[in-house]
Image (cartoon, rainbow, N blue to C red; front, side, top):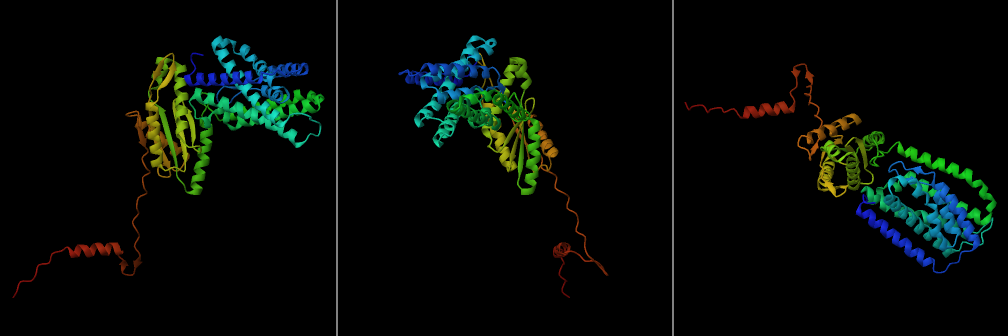
Amino acid sequence: MGNEKPGVRYWVAVVAVAAIVVTVWVSRSFTATLTDALALGLLSLCAALAHLFPIRSASDGASYRLTNVFVIAGAIILPTDLLTPLAALAVLPDVWQRRHRGLGRVLFGWVFNLSQTSLAAHAAGAWAAGIGAQDFGPLGAIQDLVVLVGGAFVFSAVQEALVAVIVSLSSSVPLNRVSTLTRPVLFSTALLAVLGAVVSGIWLALPSLLLLLPPILIIVHRMTRNAHLAHLAQVDTKTGLHNYRHFERVLEEELAHSLRAKRPLSLIFTDLDHFKRVNDTYGHAAGDTVLREISGLLSSLVRKGDVVARFGGEEFVVLLPGTEVDEAEYLGERIRAAVELHQFELGAGTAIRCTVSVGVAGYPIDAIDFAGLLEKSDAAMYRAKETRNAVARATPLVPPPVLPVEEPMTAHGTIPSQRILAAEAAALASVHVPLAAPA
């Protein structure tokens, strides 16, 4: 817990206090029955079992589970005073699974998971109670569908928002670029939301159909896991940025598009100065922290359509479609200055500063193909390395030599061009002819 950034601790505290306030507020009148208690026990057991089989995120090492399927169902089915106990029991396996991390860190993570799950469940429960989750039948009215689907997506939206903030604070990545808001994660979230709505509807309308739930959950688990594995092939797990394989494919596509559309394209090659000293002095964990924070800085400075990737080691590349070299050079200077001014917190009160060397090249002024553009930007970066903490531009392509114009021929020889005639006339005009002396 002591290694968490202050912003992360403050956010967890805010979410926890909000969850406590909501729980106390809805618990003023206890309305749960014995049937509700039995439903709570069954849903909690299913949720806890699902929590034991996580799906690892492709980019940030976080875990995504089918737990929410049963929490969403409980949010719609159960009275609101049982929703916080449902959330607590659902995420209880966290304490056992993370026991090796130390009691403080385990409780810190469990408190946040309990708080955000509880708030999301209460939001979904408020939606269901406001519209009316009752009198469901096999052929329920459209209102029933609105309750089920709406409640599921209210839960998912609240939870994703709360989690996205803490991911942004802990990884120094802009909120609109956090891994929890990437397409594979949102696909997984939507899939679980729909499945939670289905479980709620079956529970309320025809409980015997719940026997079909185990095979459905296995299929969903596999689909979600495969989506994350597909995304993993394009992501650098240490920084959360795109990897070189993805960058290479996108650069080829953007170069082809730039050629067709006759538009510019620029590439920024960035290398961290003296990175070996950071690893040797503070350890590789500190080096990883620096890499992650530089990744966040790069992501925060570019446009949404630009591509930031980790090239390898301490090298990063930024692809800027539709950008002139002058604009790219300006962005390179902003990157250099942002890194120079940034203070990298390594924990235990230790903070350091770092610098980067930046090389810039553009299409078509510097190169016209993938290899040439990469070579030019890399060479520019190495020129910046001569002084470090600098930005260098690639040398433009050497213009083709101007070939002499072949003069047309006649029977009397070559006809002089207008340029040659003009030059001869100027030479004659410059000749001084003395006046003849008088006789």
